[in-house]
Amino acid sequence: MITERRLWQALILAGLALFFLNAKGIISISSLSLPWRCPFKLLTGLPCPGCGMTHAAKSFLQGNFCDAFSTNPLIFLFVGLVFMLAFLPDKALFFLQRKGFWKVILLLVLIWWLTRLILRI
Image (cartoon, rainbow, N blue to C red; front, side, top):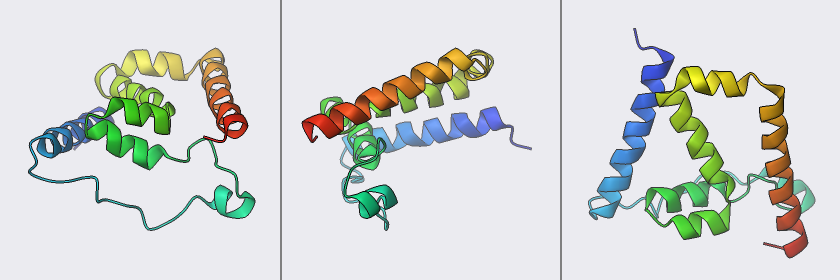
């Protein structure tokens, strides 16, 4: 039976494999796209805090970290959390169970969203 930790590790290894295969030109992840659009943006015309996360993930996997950051800097927070869950699950759970941790995450998301709205990024 596959444990949750092994599943996270397999997902990270798959992401790293995509990164290296793309870097070697064997595959191209730049042509991948999702079949849906952000419902928040469709309803309001404004980007949600997660808008651009797919593009940021593609850029991250291609090794274009500057583009990933400029598209949506929250990708680094997401990748960090995934790595912690996969390789340091006890420490990750320690942080995830703290209210203060979620307050910091929420504050970072709100700061990014307000910056994006004010600067029209």
